[in-house]
Image (cartoon, rainbow, N blue to C red; front, side, top):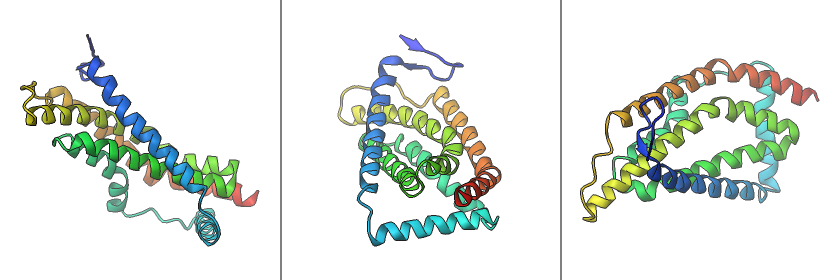
Length: 210
């Protein structure tokens, strides 16, 4: 049985679900670990974190937050999907992709939890603006790349272990999906450069003013 969306997701359903389950569980476990770790930040570490975040908000409120260099933003947004893409071209991706998603989930959850711990419900809004505006596109793109890369890596691992010659996973649909994800990530870069700084500046005024 095959599910086709726009002619590009032409992958057997029995291969989509296991790969999606593996990376989703890895992401969730990493996220839970990140939330748990944030609760252990106390004392001087917590004070330093609060001072840093309050300094960031004060700068944003005054409009002094400079847009990072394009190279910095490209690295920040493209490193995770780029790694997911590369791991799909090696059998090591069978182990590397779950680890990648666990680390991504950990860092994202830890960062969000830090905002919430410092500023309560207002931190939820701030975390959404900082991580969620572009994350609404970049995270789904990461999962699309992760699913197909894990299936591709598993196919390569099967060949390496002599379990038969499966058809090449790198067909036209594979690269069309990569192109769709690249387009979504380009939108993320635009949001990070032009929308997020203004939104964070407005939110900082509400948080510090409240």
